[in-house]
Amino acid sequence: MNKTDQYEFTIIVPVYNEEDNIYNLETKLSSYLPQALYKTCVLFVNDGSKDNSLKYLKEICQRNADFFFISLTKNSGLSAAIKAGIDSTGSKYVGYMDADLQTTPEDFNLLLKDIDKYNLVMGIRANRKDSPFKKLQSKIANGFRRMMTNDGVKDTGCPLKVLRTENARKIPFFTGMHRFIPALILLQEGTIKQVPVRHFPRTAGKSKYHLWNRLVSPFLDCFAYRWMKKRYINYAIGENNIQ
Image (cartoon, rainbow, N blue to C red):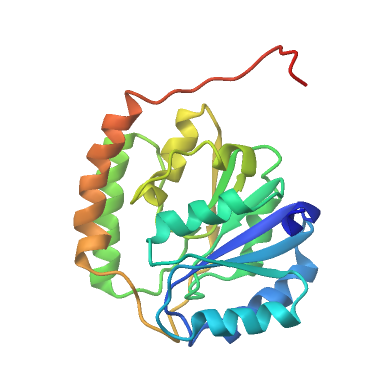
């Protein structure tokens, strides 16, 4: 039996070389779980870390009954880590957050209170604590993405998102597609709500983002999305006699 079947909500936390943040994650997440609106577990996805992240993840999972982990055999990127987490959970709802703790798990409750009415509820980072150059890059990338996808989303880069697992599993993930989760939910004729959440400066570890994967790569991915949008298959089964 998949242990996450016992929970209503799974928080996926992709981890790549975040050894300095693991114990902080333990503190924040273990404090949040008793306050969560749904019975919640945490699923860490070690994305082929080359530091002590996996060692520390095993340690904190041993002493926290609601913490679980999976470990990818090699570094495969954020989209792959998120997809691996989605494929590995059995809960009704699934969400994810970054391991850098620039958002807080406490704000999942702001999203969870509306997930029964929407297919995706996602955060908008209020008062972002990033450098002016980083915020400029995000503003340009978000504007171009909105133009290309018409998804109406203000801050697709916000890592705090909650989805119905059935919708999450239908998303055709490939490299870079984590940026297009709202647009891909809309292709399923799903509904989206955006909610302001808190944002904090990174206090440990190093950012994995740079000009290429924050600005150039998203531009290229927009064209991949446009190509896929014309070919996206969306269906729903009505009657059947196989069950």
